[in-house]
Image: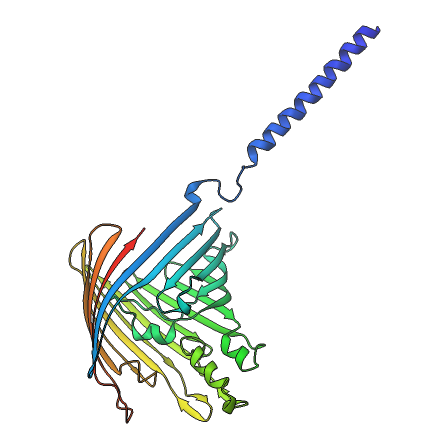
Length: 351
């Protein structure tokens, strides 16, 4: 073999190797997306809500008229795959949190491929203690007592017949009561025996970790209560939702299973509500509610309350809601508030 033949063979081999390397690099580039998390606009969603309300209330000789920007909410969600999602909600509520915008929730969810229906959740989460179904503007009294949001980790299993959920969190009262090593929990089960009916049962390790946490912490932090005994109570929630044609009815009971003991006093907070909703037309929904409470902030929460209202949707984005509430308060002695009348109108823009 002469030198020219050897040089030609070497050049051909070098060219072949270079072409193979280039083809491999090109294939690698095609497989690697430029934006691995947001490869498609369909994976990223932005939703929001703005609510403006005008209200008139009368309680005894006291009257009040107010106009508020009740809610400004921005929800961001990202689903980089079928099994992984991230949802973050920013919230402003007039009169809450010193009128600051807060991170209302931030939740990472991962669905296990090996176990159908099972998912892991972590972040600042509204945990499944309470259902709070309603067709009125105001929240039911069950929500006022039981809604709970905190940094938590949990597992959720969903099927056509049964949903199960369990969450663990540290709790705010634990920290104030020098029990930071004691984890709190929420466990819930929802049975769906057939379409249009769901039955839910949930427990919360300490009901005061929900809406009453600030009340309890304020008491524990008073100098005169230093070293006082605090003994919380398990919270219990039972709820049912039935949908029949254009009608739906939601019934719920949320309460402490036993007495809460704080600074030598005992109380057992309880709430219940029954909501009836009717989709009168495609745009008009009418609703009524009967609810009550016991040993739960008696000067603020009525012992019994009746409400009626309706909502009209002008289109997919804009709606107008009206509501009237009449509340009767428990006789707790001197200074007991008179019965209360509240009328509210709310305009909501959602996108």
